Length: 455
Figure 1 (cartoon, rainbow, N blue to C red):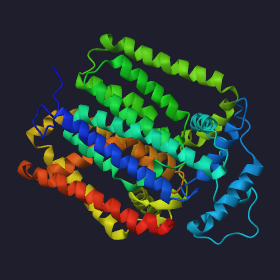
Figure 2: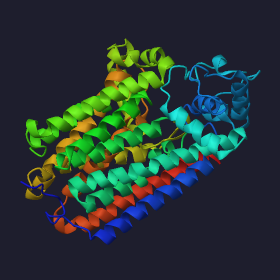
Figure 3: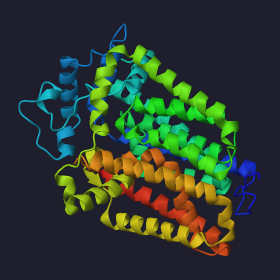
Figure 4: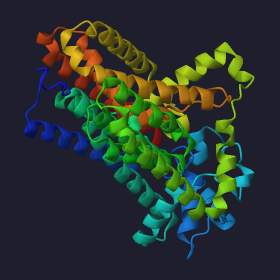
């Protein structure tokens, strides 16, 4: 049986031209806000920017790629001087040290090491710096911020494409627009940080997962998913949940009957498995000296540890609250939170969306979205479980951007859930209200948090 899409169910379907206009509007808003973030937030004021920039810079200065050469003490001294000039310690909430540290090793409580970080983001950033021809240190940092924004734009396109296939163009437009208006997402989409590349990998999973569960050609999607997972694993630990997602998405597609029989899809699965094996072998050959370093980097994620502090219920509560709050807005090095009243309203909105989904399950129109709901719930559950197993159980603090790889399914479920809380005849008013609320939250974030903090 052919898949049933939301537009065919008659749930506020959009004409193609209007749908494209809404996508263009969302991307334009996102680009404008991204440019504003780059202009307003001073250098080094996003989490871990100094050390990520330093490694990119070291690789960019090499005439021949050498991933074992990862530190330049003179560069670190110059970065620390620039950090002081741009008020880094003040924004961190500490007094400027005297004398000023001369290398990152003297401030280990603030700047972690990149000695074992996977190489993909840094090689890409180094290539961009070489092509830019920029020599000034701070100007190079801004080049990498613009690179991050360029990587982030396809995230919106993938969210649009995946959501549209599962829920129709109206939900796709809403989910993409809410993403474009999200303050913390735009801040991390303009940071010198490998996380933006992992977020793109997660968005590709949402898009290609949607193609698989709606019966599109399996070989292409499985190949893309496999390659994307490999890129994520060679980028950052937060991409670890992509590996179980790579296993779960085809299972959901088979369960729905959209992939046909095992006999029919076996070539695609074998091809994807072979591609993954070749990618692993190629990675080992290409990054010959990196095997030990990557093993060290991934070892803690592969070793199940339950830290002493993680056994404390208070830490669980603080971790969960911190994860939620910093996923919405906590600017700088998590030093500038959104107003408490707005975070309370956001919690109520998320709870309302969940209630809307539970209510909507009893409605006939939701039957067309069953596979979308299952896929979205599975991806959200895997990413969230990965955060709690890999971060919480090890006793580390939370950062909301760990959830950004599954922003597509989250925003789709949020949009649908809020509209399911009300009768269909009122949903035009609900649409306006939801967009207005998120626009107001974003405005409050800029006017009461980000701009006052940095200007």
